[in-house]
Length: 400
Image (tube, one colour):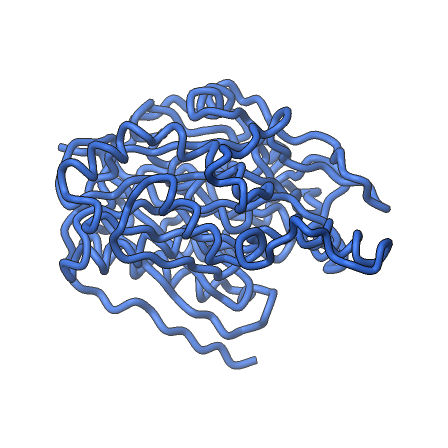
């Protein structure tokens, strides 16, 4: 089949600082809890608590999500509650950005793939049983992707440009490219980027129908890997034109691989193009990368294609890890979550374990470790690849 690849054109771009970030997912309600579990090698995957006609593990948010504040109750859904769990941790950084740049100069670029579909599933079930939708159901404020943008605007007071990106599993990686272009063009001086996705029957049953959902905890790059797990969570990061923070965004590479609607090109052409474009924009050679946070979904096709692309560009010398054995695949929140994990590797001097990868698939010529590696990193590349060939690679570096 013919593959058509369009790569982001290389152009100089400043290295914009990431001045703050927040995480909330199956590993913990707060960033500190999440990163502690990552460092200790504790997985958040467990048998799914949802009523499903098949077994699977999920990365479910721990406990009950806090209720919505009364002022935002119209947006109440699982997606909104996850978003607020992340936003609450960034409140001081958000206020500093508004004070420094002005509310109208702070933009929002957010990714999601599910939106508030869980609330719509519940409303549809009520309609089937009672013949009418619940009076409390508001499609525009509880289901739509635009609702996420409105919610975050109200919660933060940011008034700059705003967009929601939905390109499946690369959604919250592509927003870094959006933010970078806005900063380059002078449309904003700071941009809150990130992603939020919640568990729902549609995704769980959908991936089951594709025969790529594992009944057990997923095992990226393992010889006997048999599929993925779905997770949920929020990851939010603040990019600014200038400032101090734990990392710099050095490069963004995007490619569009038309090989297949759901399967990657078997030789990883789209992945290779995205990684090459990120390196070109950052003006770096492959040898400058100290660690790769792989997309690594634990499906047979994805892991094989990504490993081929990594081996072709980096050989087998760069340590590679997939963190989906910790959180599951967070879909629209995966890119931003793994960007934050990449920044944590720069900050904390370790490469997380690739849980479940032992024994490693001998056909994959890349360096994957099932154990945490103590390694000082200066530059980390993070991959996010999606249905339809929407591929993104991000490079983060330590500040001088």
